[in-house]
Length: 326
Ligand code: TRP
Image (cartoon, rainbow, N blue to C red; front, side):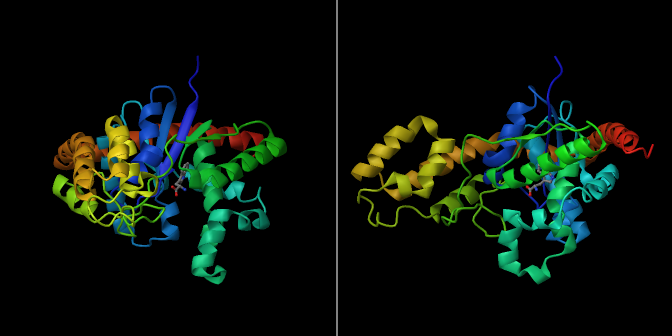
């Protein structure tokens, strides 16, 4: 049986945090046997927020190392930069003729940013962000896109564009489905609903044990649990959500001991950092091995780009034929 294809990606914003892992990366690793997987470093998408290209390159390498350290296998899964496969730009241009400006302005992610930045200051390319993403996915004929919940509106736009193209020119593209993780996204250490490096509330996949312990010490808990033996409410406690993810075996006990007031926050956080550190230890080890052998990392990228390019060229050939541009 032919395997279904996955295409997913991330913007290279630097080293990844545990929220990236829980929200997407874990799923990518799990799915790489069942699906034919492709993963892209969205180094064009990131230009909507970051203009220093040297930094983008360094961030791309750091992110790739995190992917590899977490368990993406380059033998099974090509990993590549969007900018190195020119077909992305070409398909993006074609797709930009198949969707209205009004539809793109209804995109909730854009609206959110418009609120923060004021619509006048949004770059032209930002409006096309989901169109480029559609090109990313459909160039590889992705059937499934494992992403965080925030990306679902973009996948919907991808489906619409695929339908449009197929109706207009003939069947080329599948209509991809989003694949969500079962675990909701991780909140940041400050209790903000989003863990993000720029908000300074993240635990990085590459954080050494003492850093994790320090960070957790400052994490918010139930604000009503002031003294050590006050009864707490695990359901409103951020650290408890981390236990659920990284310490499932002890969750029932922790919940009971927090509620009864037997367990204080200091000990609970220490225990949590031990578990997170156990989880991160093999990744940190692997990361160090890759850091000592950057040439190998670049080779992996190179090989991934070659494989991706071959698929992209085939798709564009089909596109040109259907559009009678061949
Ligand atoms: N928009 C995604 C994000 O911000 C990154 C991305 C770019 C992507 N191209 C993609 C995700 C294609 C899935 C498929 O995280």
